[in-house]
Picture 1 (cartoon, rainbow, N blue to C red):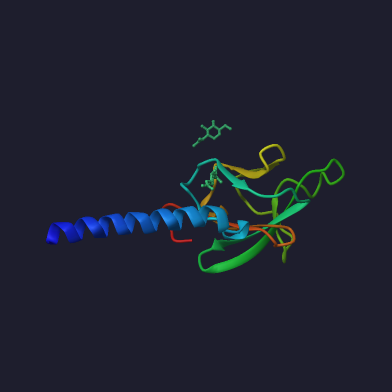
Picture 2 (picture 1 turned 60 degrees about the vertical axis):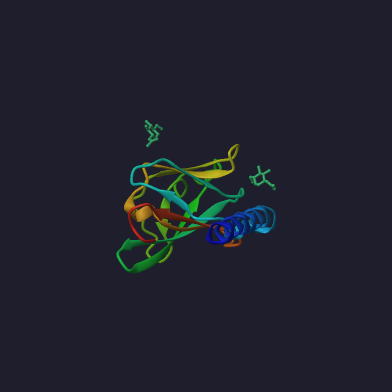
Length: 138
Ligand SMILES: *[C@@H]1O[C@H](CO)[C@@H](O)[C@H](O)[C@H]1NC(C)=O
Ligand SMILES: *[C@@H]1O[C@H](CO)[C@@H](O)[C@H](O)[C@H]1NC(C)=O
């Protein structure tokens, strides 16, 4: 009796999780993708649609969130492209070397720093992707 029940429950649970995984796969809209988890100094690939610029909300100081902008280099913006900038102070911020790879359709951060974890978005904020630290709560 106990064994049978256990077996039935096991089958039920695995069936339900299959259904959940399946529907998750097909119905999850892009903006609610699972967070990317990375360790310090990893090279991180963040899938992002093509955009002239990207934004992120990060904590440079613990508990203080700030928004930063990254402009993709287009040949005409050499002085303002290729780095993260605090949108309020307009100061360049320290970060892992960031580039946008058009072939991979992804922002790539080399040697991610503690201060690079947070919420990444396209410039228009329509698409977002969380990047969490494996060791810190983001
Ligand atoms: C689930 O998603 C992956 C990657 O997006 C895809 O390769 C796979 O075919 C999908 N499976 C189903 C059952 O939709
Ligand atoms: C990150 O990329 C650099 C070269 O671009 C490589 O030397 C390094 O081993 C990579 N690090 C990891 C953790 O994959």
